[in-house]
Each structure stands twice: as structure tokens, then as C-alpha cells.
Length: 180
Ligand SMILES: Cc1cc2nc3c(=O)[nH]c(=O)nc-3n(C[C@H](O)[C@H](O)[C@H](O)COP(=O)(O)O)c2cc1C
Image (cartoon, rainbow, N blue to C red; front, side, top):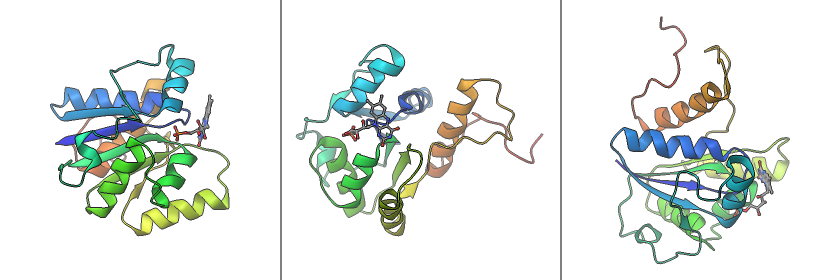
């Protein structure tokens, strides 16, 4: 599959970094784009704004996938800030991430958003509901604990595994409930 992994400026850029890594290891074509705020958070959380890169800049509006004529198989915004969520929910396609997401919706292609915020306001919830009703997958960064995580990486892999599940991609990132 050809998948766009977009990082926006929410905490938890590690989820997106790991997602891009796992997809590439699985032989998928991965495009990487990060907003400027995501790069700042990568610097804060991971030590470098280019971790796992190179990352296309949000200003590169001439990228192929900014057009509906380019056929991406799926796009995941991971993590997704409340600002990017709001822009996508309202068709405010002002940077490469929000434009690419806008294209996925208008073309009826798979789009997964991994929001990270707490608490969540009524504004955030309304934006999520609107998108869910349009067929966008809202997959919050909410790791479960029933697989008995031993560390942060297990929690990250749980969320990344759920993203892969939503795209129909096989993985063994976490132990499934009911399977020994
Ligand atoms: C260290 C840090 C952590 C942040 N964490 C979050 C977060 O978890 N969720 C969120 O919605 N915004 C978070 N923000 C705020 C966003 O970065 C801010 O709203 C920004 O405008 C998002 O822009 P973008 O979506 O274009 O990347 C954080 C900002 C900083 C500096």
C-alpha cells in the first residue's frame, strides 16, 4: 500500500514515528509529512526535529498527494492535534496535511486520525463526530492495558497496531485478547 503518515503538533509524535517505521518494515510505500508544530514537538519529545525523517514540510503544497488525481491508498494523521482536527472537519486546507486529508475525504479514500488531547471539549467532540459521520476513522491515542504492557514501547505499539487493524494490515504488535 502507499500510505501518507502525517505528524501534527500534538504530544505523542512517537506514535507516528513508530507507525512510519512499521509500515516501511512491512514493505509499504510511506510518505512522511510533518507540520511545523509537529517538528517542534519532535525536538522536545525525541531530541531532534528530523527524527525518523526526512519529513516533508507542511508548506510543500505542490506535493502529488495534494491533488485528487494522485492515488494514495490511505492517510493517517498521527498524532492529530485539535487544531488539525478542526481544520480537517471544516475543509480548511491551508497546509499540506490538511489539504491531503481534505483530498482523502473528497475522493472517498481511507483517512485515519489519531487525536491526542485531554480533557476533550465539546468543540473537539463535535469535530470528531462530524468526521466520523463522513467515514473518517477516529482512533484516539488511548492504549489498552489488557495485553500487559511492560513499557512505553508496548503502549505505543498497541496504538500503532490499532491503526494497522483499521487499515486491514496484519501485524503482531500486541497480543490479542482471547488468543494465547
Ligand atoms: C509541547 C506541546 C505539546 C502539545 N500537545 C498538544 C496535544 O497533545 N494536543 C493538541 O491538540 N495540541 C497540543 N499542542 C498544541 C498544538 O501544537 C497547537 O495547537 C498547534 O497550533 C497545532 O498546530 P498543527 O496542528 O498545525 O501542528 C501542544 C503544543 C506543545 C508546544
